[in-house]
Image 1 (cartoon, rainbow, N blue to C red):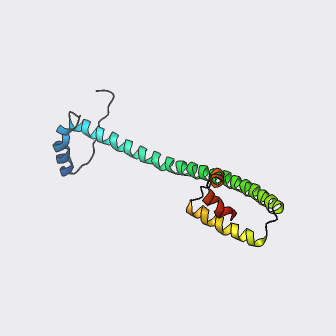
Image 2 (cartoon, rainbow, N blue to C red):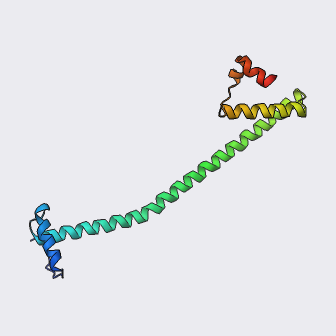
Length: 138
């Protein structure tokens, strides 16, 4: 035998009966080998469970950090877009002398159009679609 040591263990008789019933379905030749396999399996299970308990929080934390990083990047980009949009609105309102009435009209038409097109409004589609252009330009 390959450097093994004999141990006495206590088991209920029904457990020994279960081992004898399932021994033909295993890869083991005898009850000792069956018990060694069962112990090795259980040790592997416990170690895997310990690994999962250790890794799960790490993976969860890494995902949380990535989402927070993405949120920060998106927030920064949206802020920059808002600044550019505000600059364009200031230039257009000054250049075309847009009054409060026209501004309110444009707000209503644009909000409705954005809602109906799910925010997909292409400049070229407005320019070439006369019905759509009339809605925007009156």
